[in-house]
Length: 286
Image 1 (cartoon, rainbow, N blue to C red):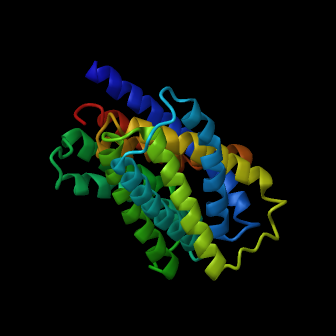
Image 2: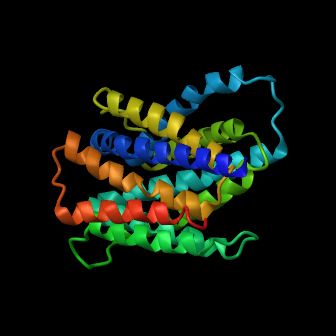
Image 3: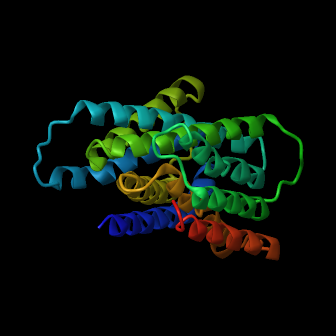
């Protein structure tokens, strides 16, 4: 039964990575029309609205939210807001390739943090993480070795994402995942919009042009994929989840090749293969 739960969780995480990879195209297009924090705040609000019907239709509603669900949702939503906005602002000051590689460093940061928990990752997770890291490097080659302002912002994002994965695994086992996900989305949206109000001026000038990217990034990336992540992390360890979710980079590269006519080199294909191998190796001993 436990193995079946783990396999189900792995499948949900793989689907999450696939949706995130496809939605990355929409996020890139949408960022051309709306400021970063406003784009994030709007898409997470759309994700919240997408999840609401499932919350109200869930058996046993109305459901009094527990303290762990409130605390977990607000904490995870705060971490998500910090990570996603650091990433968006970092991309403005660095290349997409470097941003993708640096963000993906959470695949190694998560197992390192797991050493300090009651269930540290096994050798399969460590080996899988470093294989995935090597694949990320090949998939997102850095055009320059300079460590710029944007790189620092994205590096902060990677560390915060790692803590987000750890926190989500903790709270998802102790509360109802759907409610934690909803509070998380609302918190992230609220904080992003507040930041946009004070530092971006809530400039909605490009809203009309960004409606389709917002719908894709909000409904699919947030409403569906992030919810699947919360549900899946209830039954798997953080290091294992991070490795599978890092396949987002593979699906993003393939989506860019299909929809944006971006070049997919033999080096990038080798990187995709290494990342896939890493996710398989992680199954040996999570």
